[in-house]
Image (cartoon, rainbow, N blue to C red; front, side):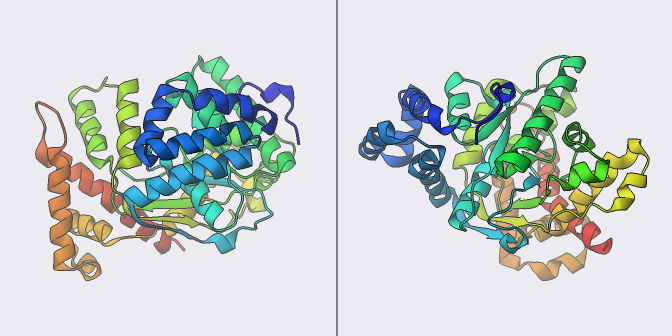
Length: 383
């Protein structure tokens, strides 16, 4: 099915555009450096020679993206598992709203897991702030990504949000593709994941009917993501200190590139993605004051994400070190505690600030690992 021309500025590339755009991407020097690093020069040349025969998005993902992700998984994950796949249908189209751990890998790894479990891959919403070079936009749009514009003034942002909302609704209801979006703009650097009500408001800028009818039409199936080790934890702690010391501090494009590189290649240990049940949208939400409807929906999504975290010993060790609560000690061994404390100490040493505050960084990183446990406890207590 074709897309209306109104979406040409943000939509993913369609099959008829694949061959020409791929021919440009494979000639980019940075792309070649990345692919040689992952596969070796000889294997990359073989992969590159296949490009002229690639004419569909599906074939592009099979011949390139899945192989790239398999290499990343092999090099950086102890194992990776998708839980909750029984909660969705292989013929359904869903809006997967997820917590956001890694600047680029979250949707890529979800698509990898969906593929190996026999599901179609999703379309991915990606912020234009990450499209630092033209080839990145070409590559991600080949990989079923649509562009989330984050520039412009208040009035322009309203139009941008309406445009994106209409696109996403069209993809789910007409194209019958699933979509991934993060629950908020940017990562929750302390790993306390909460859906921005603005996301819900954006979703309901399109469609017809009541608040409930428009939300139900999107078949929201939240996904909980947890990494045993977050390769970027020390970079996040560094940013916390930079903002503490200078409230006006902002990341640079170079900072984003470093976060992408470390997140992709850094060791993640065990990785778990868990698909929750589809969000129940009761009629009673129509009776909630309009100003509060988005907050109610966001809280319900949070509860599903938090309740479905897969926790690791690290999460319990961090919570124990922060609180001293002996109940957490039953979930880890002395060796696991010692290993995690050594890991945190090593990550602190990676922070390249002349005035590095070691204890501040340590506390921030412990909180990153403890917050998923704290939030899961709250979600399960509320049931």
